[in-house]
Length: 216
Picture 1 (cartoon, rainbow, N blue to C red):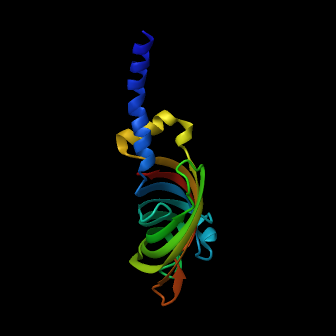
Picture 2 (picture 1 turned 45 degrees about the horizontal axis):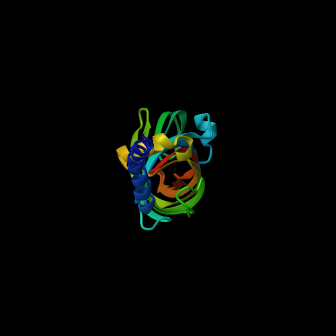
Picture 3 (picture 1 turned 30 degrees about the horizontal axis):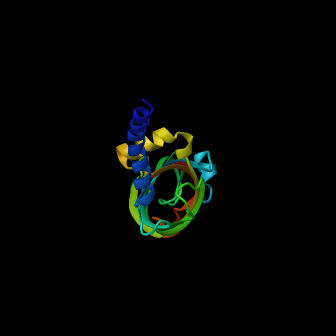
């Protein structure tokens, strides 16, 4: 009877052991981030005209890992501000303004990860930014276009797998996700665009973001 119980126990444990072995031998090749936070524009007088020094920002990234610590990726973000304020691209104080930015970033990133069970991982990176903009002013029309610049970002990611090992295992089996992290980061961008009046403004600024990172 004892032998039978032992054999049955081993049969149940073998798949889990095989999964753990396979998972430890493999490594993630992709990163997916979903994030949101606040964006503080470099535009002078933004708080005075829009009622707040910051506005909401949302984004996501997809990156390929060249090696475990280094990856190349693309990031898309969305920023919007509206109200009675200054129209920076028109170059004058206006009535109701809708100000939208669509930053598109191509980046290289280094993550300080040296163990698959490392709880806290620092990271930093940066690269090229193309900023698409759309500014609408009541009774004055719109200004649309794009400008190029650069960005840099750094942050910390915190491993969540240990909070629920069973859920993490299921996530790997069902979707191929090796690790899930919560992260916080700061990002700075500088993108100079020409105004209608012939001047130039920096459409970039500083972002403070948080989100979830999935490695698969």
